[in-house]
Length: 503
Image (cartoon, rainbow, N blue to C red):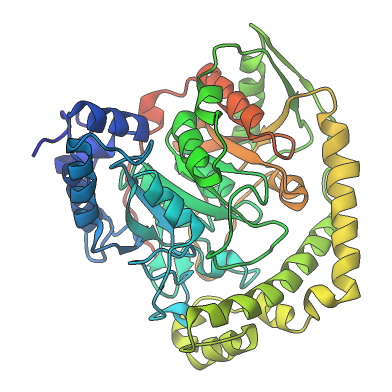
């Protein structure tokens, strides 16, 4: 058995025995596997050791980013190695370890969405996402923790907390939020527990943890990646997507998830002719983050890249109110349809989930309530006129008032995403600052990406990029150009694992 050659030791890495695999991105991993520099068995074994050392309750770090590991992963790794030895590879991720968010069904993993309502309800078939990963040769090593029910339960929730796994920490500073709802996917990749992971986003749930953990994340156009076998919130806004350490890795994973080709080529294209519109009115309200964004936008200009101001209407309270109405109505219908597909054991409807959580309040409602569930249950779902009116107003704002006028004449739009990770507060909930950049893209179903912008107060912050619906190629190309132009130093892309107490 061979292992990857060791790299220089990072002074703050808490498990130097596995740092040689933790520092590998997916492209380097695939290259080592292809050239015989390592085996899938060695990689998977080292990463499972790292998860046990850093993620398990009672360890020094106790990151809690991985909700469950797949006991069958080592056997799958052996199978991938045997296939390679016979001259057969399944696809571009052959033998590469991957994590998926635990609201995505995969045989061998619990698929709980962090909720006890879905615990012990065996997943009997792979989702299309899991099947695509396996067809591409990936080894799914585990499922990641998340904000329970993908953070649609309460306006006072703390991102990264679930009743099943507890609170995910941020590997940059353990008393800071990992963001959400794809909290575990972000924290795990940043901590080197896997080179890439799948998250899901309704509004911000990939972009937020990517920004707070220093990663690249992409929410693709709604409908371009299957949501079958994914615990639902909103059929009009939900989309799975990749989270990784580089644009190229994210593009490679998105090609597998969506079946769309050419994205890796777009990430590597040398022709950098690009028109970038800057959403100047979309600010986080955090002085250091907004100042860094202004410097970043200025640094992008030149050598074929044109940067200028794009006037984008900011959302007011009515836009957010309409979006919430849409999400709650779609949530009711979506969960009522989904829950019976997970077998007869356990809650079969949203109303039964509410009753279950009230009956197990000491576990489920330990830190915050489920006010949004109660509001959703009180709606008429998507059959109600309130839903139809809210969705129509939302789309008109997102498309006709905001995005279409703003992007006219530009290839992509950019804005800061989130301020540095905020202190975890299980009493009062999330207290972070963010620009509204995810909202118009979420409502319209347009693709949005996040790339690392640098550090503020020693913590990562991200730059968000919006492209037109269906134009992931331009989105990826722009993200790669921005990644190269900003050239965030490697030392500023690796977490510090600063210790602190957390709830």
